[in-house]
Image (cartoon, rainbow, N blue to C red):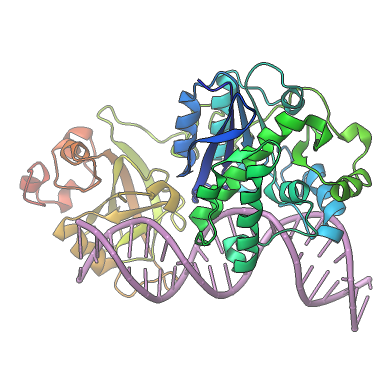
Length: 438
DNA sequence: TATACCGAGGGGATCTCAAA
DNA sequence: TTTGAGATCCCCTCGGTATA
């Protein structure tokens, strides 16, 4: 068991993108070592990890705002950080507000924070600087951290989207220099090797390493080399500083806005749709209509909706906001204003269905033929709109046993589940058969 | 004073390509 | 042939700064 473990989490903010986790352990000789290679992860992976982490003393540094209260605009700490560092260092901060889905009621960050809180982790940045006993988490930003750690003249444009290979190599070189800094980070040469490809995946992993090191740096040097800026009630950021960045920060932040002791309280914003906020709130449950019935056999019927078709192979939630579930169920549509009122089944993507908010047409030849007919010539720029009714059904057990979302048949659950409104347009002899639609 | 550009980050559309 | 992951491009928000 390691004495202290520092975890960096580059959350990638949204539900769609993947982030990365990195764990560094403090050795008896004061050096840091990697517990495991930095790893790509989504929100569900990160939250699952948070549920099972078993370190005696644990510091989690998160590259995302954790205290976000306002519906619009920047938080005070972001505005002041940009004011202090933009002019000389070209370093700004992304506006965090609850209008952004990254901080909305269904945002993954709240699930993650609620799991940490539930396991006794405290959001108390100064307790880390004072090396208090217990486990803690806090918010950090990589760009101001790099300015402070390496006394840079300006931010490094190492992000993949900048396509700046020079800055990327510069970052790798700086990170490798951590091997001889205080505290030394052993083994960094393996994960920041010269020539490491500049990809989004590697970028996330490096951000996670930076966040983990910021946590270790905060714990090791305390307020001598890092500072907690802002307010525990409106938002704060912990960042290492150089002499130059400290002078710039001092010119904007009042002494009362630095190193404020106490616990910050993250709060999931209330949803307007009546969903209950809390640890069990998931992306699938958010936005479900209050009157949406759930059948005794697991089938859930929806009402009449506008069906927007943009793709001959898939159905997209971004243009069909009534779609709320993308995993673990199939979606059955009855197209009311198409000839013969055809019914069509959609099944989840094998991966990333929730992130992409989409489902694909099932493998039944009949469903494919009907969907192809309905969507002939459509595209995102030329969508076609129908009236339809929908229902969610549990996936066929045979399909789930195989661990895929491959829809194999009408398995009989349909008739038992009470979804009968399409029965007239499907041959009844096939509706309970197992192979006739495969 | 108005405009353009900077930084942070996001998402959607489109394309390519490997795998099934 | 189809699927879906990944890359790329473009445009979005928001506040600060430089320049015309």
